[in-house]
Structure formats: structure tokens, C-alpha cells
Length: 297
Image (cartoon, rainbow, N blue to C red):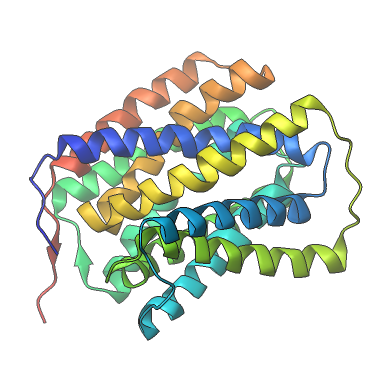
């Protein structure tokens, strides 16, 4: 793997862009689940996004001939991120506000760091741990204010399970995306998620949809921007700077997610949110300046 500069401006720009696209999906998802069944609508999104990605990849000369490791990790990523993480979040957002869902998802970097340290020997230096702690503190500040008025406990549990699945998917991603055919892998892992969600949704949901311009717009946006473009950027980002450092950009989710929810859905933006944003930004800077290292042995 090619080493990147200590402070990679391109990676920072792509990370910020990814975070905006990714966190905006929570507001569009909130619109979708209000008028369509969550798992079946998400399966439709992944089927379309996957088809677009596979078609573009084929036009670029990429093939479906993957290594055994790529197939295995693509399946893990498709199940953990697309089916479990997003599936559980879509269900939760029937009762959990988009801003709260965004904030819970931003705890993923700490889970990635802890799992990477426990199982892969990826030890962030002291500055990295300080940055992770600051990011988590900023998220806690925002989330504490948000849930003080009452929140759906079951929905929050689903969010917690979903973000854990995302952390596992992030650590598995390196094996899936190494060896080329990156865009093809993006499309294939979406089809894996679509199949799993279609099966689960077919057993538990009824396809009852209220078609409105608002729903069509939300589906189209979610399919193309967070579904296709953001996923490709995320794969690229992990390959460039590593899973732990890339994951810190999820700490920006409260920044963009709360702002987008305030604009599109009328959800409140308070001074507590702004204070949390400043703490999150400091955490991001610390982690980006820290040099990752591996434990001995």
C-alpha cells in the first residue's frame, strides 16, 4: 500500500465530502420511511445503485473476476453495512429523529479503533486516542441534549446494533477492496445487501407506498449520492489513509446531519449542537495529525 502524507489534504477534502453525503442520507431516509416500508425500500435503493455501479465498472473495463478474499469480504461488507447497519437504521428512523440517528452513527470511529486494537493490532498513538476521546465527547454532548426530551429506547438500541455492524464492515473493507476492481466491488456489495433486505422485508413487510414527489426525490437522491458516490469515496478513503483514520470522519456526521435535518425537516439546532461541533472538529484534527502504528509482535 502506498503511504500517504502525514496530513493529506486530498484525503481531508474527500473525507469531509463523504461525511456530508453520508450524513445527509439520514434526512432523506426519514422522508422515505414515512411513506414506504423501510427494508423493502432500502432493498430497491441498493438494487438500483448496484446496477449503476456494476454498469459503470464494466464500461471502465473492470471485471467480476475477484479473488476468493475479495468475494468473502464483499459479502461481509454487503451484509454488515448495507443489510444490518442501514437496515436497522431505516427501521429505527420510523421513530428516531434523523439528527439523533446521525449522532449515534458517528460513534463508529471509536468502535473501529477499539476493534482494530483488540483484533488487528492497530494501536493509535496517544494523540489519536485523545482525538477519538474528544470526538466521542462532542457526540455525547450533542446526543445528551437531544435525548433529554425523550427518545424511543428500542430505536436507539437498533441504532447501536447497526453502528456496531458498520464498524465490523469498515475493518473488513480492506480485504474486499485490495486487488483492483473497486467500483465493481462497490456494486456487488450493494447487491448482497439488496438480496438480504429483500428477503427480510418480504417476510415481515408489505409493499404499501404513498408515491409523492417528495418520496421520489428522496429515493433518487439516496440512491445516487449516498448510495453510489459516497460509498465509492468511502472505499477510496479507507484504502488511502486506513480504516481507523477514515472512520474519524463519521465524527462529522452530527455536524452535517443535524444541520441538514434542521433545513429539510425543521429539526431544532441549538447552542449545545454548535458546542459539540467544535469539540468534534478538534477530535478530527488530532486523529488526522496522529501517526498510526502497529503493536509489536
